[in-house]
Length: 207
Ligand code: PRP
Image (cartoon, rainbow, N blue to C red):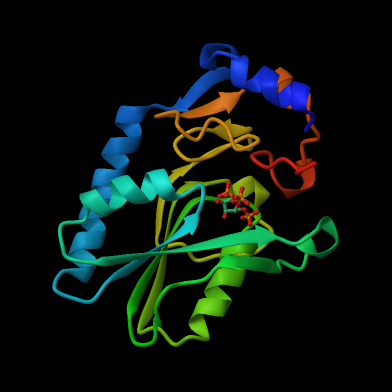
């Protein structure tokens, strides 16, 4: 993205960038409370480690852990897709690994969105090799239309259409993560950059 376009985005008021609110803040919070209650019942009195996949899931993670009414630990991973030539193979690069071993632990992997499923599929295979006692998945958003790899997800906040969504942790060009709702970006906002349609409409290739 050019310096000019990046500056334009920073100067654009949110109201001029967002076409419509797809999931509003009270709806998100209510769903998280419901998921948190289910997770609490599932793990009450047991070991539990929540792993957030940076960066998109941090907002969901922050609210989710406060909706879980049983003691648990948290950790973080950061991933990045390889170039377009290897994306179809689902290989992701680990930019930040976990701080501690997960062997014998009950792990809950926390994502903001599942699109093709490649990221989660890779992470699940990698984490299973580390022999956790259990490994479950929770995602705030799911785009079933985009799925290329079948995933068995234990908790899904919302299934959404294949719109370009931002907010509540999700970004366009690293912006809009701070919006308290899930919004659909106006096409003119992302048409200034090269949007990578093939990997999912919430993604945009880095220049
Ligand atoms: C998003 C999201 C998932 C992944 C899902 O991360 O947080 O990790 O894409 O896409 P997939 O199902 O097609 O693999 P992104 O690469 O946008 O990074 P970010 O979380 O730092 O914004």
